[in-house]
Length: 387
Image 1 (cartoon, rainbow, N blue to C red):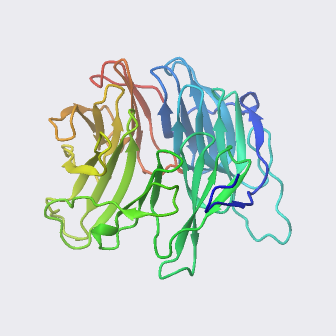
Image 2: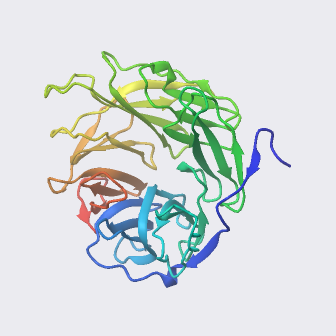
């Protein structure tokens, strides 16, 4: 039975399945682009060569002692790795035309098709990467993986209202079928986050009106209502603002707000930095905060990376340091990282039993890998480089 407000919409093609056994061997020396881990022993890493567009996804089940290539292609990597447990992972990629991924070559474009870029796909596994299902991606951008099967996309519609609008696309069967819901005129979306089939958040681009930064839906995107966030103290002018969400292991949410001055002066305003907002519990709606995150000794030009540990503690990384706290208001314990000067923290996975995985980067661009992979077995006190 079709749900009200959702209409069937064509996909871009039928899913195909490729086997990890068909992946080409991973060349050594590729830098790390992204990493995600489900446990102290198990996880996936994306590595590649941005100059030649060679991309590889590697898998380990022995804490990084060995790595097995599971996907190999020439093209691009989008949006980050999403890992749900030791057997389930998903992400988005694109395959250059006239090339293959694990032996599968997408159908060539017709002579009247002007598109010459790589062909986009959603990739997901439910068997620890032994096989991957590739789903041709419909025209859209900004995928959000609630599960490997339940995936949300946003599609911008030009000419609808002053700023256009975004429509929601979703699949509940891993891309076999798609549905579309028409959005609201003049309401755009930078990021989406869904906690269930009904409950989600929309993080809008900052246009100078703080009240229009965050919206919430409780009916699967049929209606969006403003969600009020307290403004950081002392904020002035029209700063650069970025708002992202982090799902806690208990199912709750954190919001990570990065604000940067538009001033060209070398002297930075005191309010510039990264802040946390914590979703209220016990059925109470809204977020507490903002809580200012500590700055590294050497200031970083990138926002903090934030993650929630299996024990409920918060981890934040910036520059070549990580900070740990039991409460967003602190106190924060500081740890130095053995990163080269040009590297900075890009991803943290505190998976439990004192094990923390950490990815670094040089360029902060997933499609152009430039990082390294580290692992700590003693709660962040010491680190060992693996890739």
